[in-house]
Every structure is written in structure tokens, then in C-alpha cells.
Length: 358
Image (cartoon, rainbow, N blue to C red; front, side, top):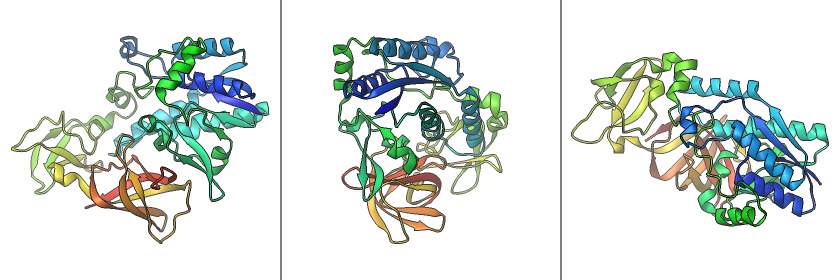
């Protein structure tokens, strides 16, 4: 089989390409160049991804493996993704650009390139398992649950999933590094990509200053219960639901951001209990392992990437999916993804959080 392997220059994608080659596949490596230049923060050791150095690492690994290698320029498309990121913050939402990038750019562009080369499948170094479930291509959490990346893959379509290989699904991270070391791959000790690639320093406000400055316009910080003004916020794009630090106010108890109204440029604050929500409404739902209907389906739902999935019931309601949690969850933020699993770790589906109620 001719497989197009996404190679980011990191240890995971490098080992994935090596394993595919050893399994007898014809492999072509591809690096997706996003046009982002690492700034001072990255030079101080902050590790993002998709930099010039990453491209060089990917090319070195491909050369060592003896496989063809291409660097694709998708800077224009990526620029639109960054614009969407800034626009979401300006709307008072908390975006997750990595999810959109996987769906629209990494997999979308990769599949298009694969078709042009006659490739039969694409592969990535994500930690997830792809399998068939009831006649559908589905995702399951990997053997190394600490590295689970199913949350950022939930929007992949059936057409994308059916042509996707995930060679690391049965491996732990330490095993992957050992495999890289045994094969003499020069990236075997390379740090992981922990930051958003276009925010290598971790402060996304620089992006907002450039692309959506109105999102950083100061406005009233109000008590969510009384409506009384308690301070001034630094812009609806500078805060997110659940945030505690950096609000510039103090009280008898800790204060958290409980709501953001971009239309009035108002940020509401309250106690931690005020963050608790029992029902969450999600749009753009993608049925991955199961087609949801109006009949509630039991599962475990995750409202953030590092959130421990919680027992819940999900049902389709018009164009949306409503997820009712057994125990209220804290701070489900509009713009983030909600992903539903069964008890065995199969991804049932996921969507984008629009609103929540207590």
C-alpha cells in the first residue's frame, strides 16, 4: 500500500513513518509548512511545531529512512485558520485551533496530496486507534491513555477516517522513544510540541493585537449574580470561561470568569460553584462511532482536552446535541469541543460547545 505519512519533525510522526515502512508499505513523507516563523519565545526553548527546524528534522528522518519527502506550503490556508482563531476570541469564545487544523488542513491537504500521488492512505503520529464499529470507521482511545489524542481528531469525516492509519495506537510514549533510539532516528529525545504552533510563547494576545485588536478593548467586569460592576477587564479576548488568575480583582472568595458577552463587552465573574453546568449544547456534531437520535445515549463526555470524561446522556435536538451530565461539570467554554465516548473508549461523536445551563 502506498501511504502518505505526515511528518512534523517530531519523534511520534518519525516512528510512525518508520513502522509503516517496516510493515512493507511504500511510504512518502510530507511536511506541512504553515508559514509561521518562530519568535524569541521559541528560541528560548518553547517547543511548538511546524517550524523551519522541524522541517529540517523531518527531512533528515526521511533521508535516513530512504523515502521520498515533500514540504507542502499551506501558509495561505493556515493564515485563515489564525484569523478564525482571533475572530472566535473576539466573539467571546475559546477556540481550539488544533482540532480545526487536523480536520481542515492536516488531513484535508494530506488526503488531497495523497490522491495526486496515487496514495491509498494517509498516516499520522497521533496517539489513537482507528477501527470499524457497526459499519462505520471509528476512533478509540490509545493504549497510552495519558497521550490520548482522540479529542482533537473527533471531527474527521468517514471518508477521512477510512483512509487514515494511526501506527502508534498500541504503543506507549516511552516505547516510541525507544523505537526511535533503536533505529538511530535523530529526534528520539526531541521535546514534545506543547504549545499552539503560532503561539510558541504561550501568550495568544499578541495574535489578537495584530488580527482582532477590538477583542482587547477594556470593559466592565461585573458580578454575575447582582450585575454590579466590580472592576475592569482587559478585553473579552483576554479571558476565558473558568479563568481565575489575572482578573485584577479580589474578594472574600476566589473569583472566576463565569460568562463573556462580546456584544456588550462585558465579563461576568462569580464563585467556583457558579461555573458548574449540568447540560451542555453542542453544534456541528460529527457522528463518529454512532448515529445519535432523539433517544438519549449513555456515555462519558469530555469538555476539554485534559478533562476526565464524565458520565452523561446525549440526545439529538434539532441541529444540536444536548449532553446532560450526571454530576455538573465545571466551566464548559463555548468554542471548545465536547467529545462523547462509550465505556470502552470508543469515540461516539463530538461537536462544538455553544451554551450550557445549570
